[in-house]
Image 1 (spheres, rainbow, N blue to C red):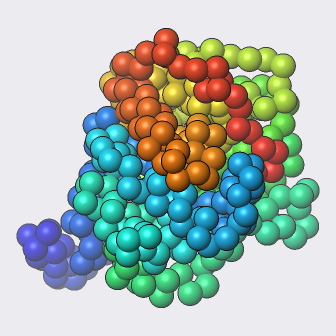
Image 2: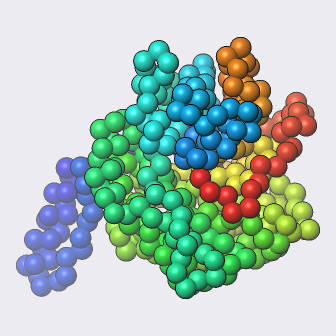
Length: 377
């Protein structure tokens, strides 16, 4: 790093001497750490546990098993996740909601310490949610840039080393040019701010499953939003070696009558990524987006049947936790069984990341879709 800075300074002096325009080389005090963190998360056989649902959304999960949405119940469930023995073998990072980042377990241990002891990098959701985009066809934009630099600095002090910002693109609603542009520019500004605070940004312009479109229309929109996003990230001097992506897979809409096999999803998705994503990016950590646990794992496995320019893995929420909730049911006596359910799903996706997943031992429950129209975190 020191050599690179000296070289950049020398180039600047030389440029001034010859009258040529200097090339600005971006460098911050966190560059080396960002690259190390991104590559640690994008490590073989491991992916991300997304447990960053807002308190309201977490409450819906708890209510589905008959539990009241209280801080104690939310803590108990999140404690189950972060204290699962052996989780670090399959999970490299965990995205948390702000409440969890500053929370302790029932024994007084910090949630972040539970993760780091298993070599799992703590992450934090930093956006402030979706609101209606004025003068659009029911589209949304994502809030949270105001004060983001200060929040990221506090999150870093609390132990977080990566961040997540989720914006969405709706195919049935357009998407309009202004919605695509706002989504991409907001993500780029967030990524630049996060990197300057020492947090690896997960960049997530989620193309929603909503709609009856075919897979070709999904491909078209995915290419459009990722082109915009990388354009604005380059404009904002975001260091691509220190980011991670969280795309949706290229699939038909949830209401489409055309169903496609995992091999087709993999072919379309990888083609889209090769057209838009530089190989400098360390990892592609897919969201499940309402797919069933089985679908999400099968599609990931199909994408890892041959080498890729990036680490192709997962950042799943519902596709890792759906079975866990059903088994746990909020009962202390089911704690171990719930953690075993989490390990089973984490191992299945670890195997899929390495292209060696065997679905023969899956239960019928794994085929149940978790899709919710207009899903909000």
